Image 1: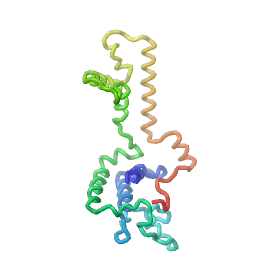
Image 2: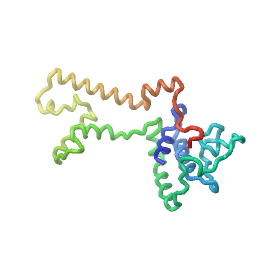
Image 3: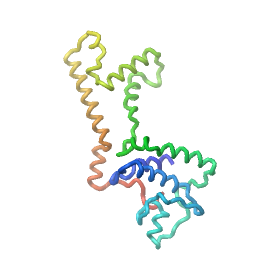
Image 4: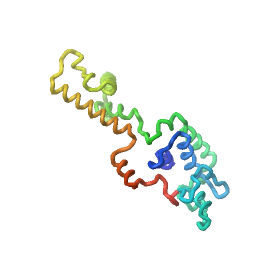
Length: 211
């Protein structure tokens, strides 16, 4: 289910979602598809086309294609007891909130706080004990570096010790590298993804007959 949710959030790179409603529909389609049965099919959110990833809707456009039973398809979760399915449905309701999905448009599923956290763990390793004072000091320094840059937050410089030309140059370089990294991540695509898209080699999030 986690894999299906992730695919639905990322969608098709060739046809990005225009709003959260489309993304929400895709997420619910994957869940309802997975819990459908022959007696109770729930494919109303699945794409309706001859090349749909949903075997049930695809059969509507291909009369010659035999419609398989749900139990014969992979990703079959209808055996989950209904009392447990209620809890899963509640989780999906939370995961399809408009506030959450709006942050995932254009494939931006990365947690924005992870960048700050990684800088903290570089200075205070998770697997080693550190006292409260050291952790607080590190958090304050990393927050300054994260928000105003390495050069302007240089601690010894603010204490009046000055800064050598080489040190100043190195800190400026670090700030520029951070800026470039942020711009690359904010585009939502990497150079490799752009090349694949240009060549038309992007793989669809779903494949016909595989789900």
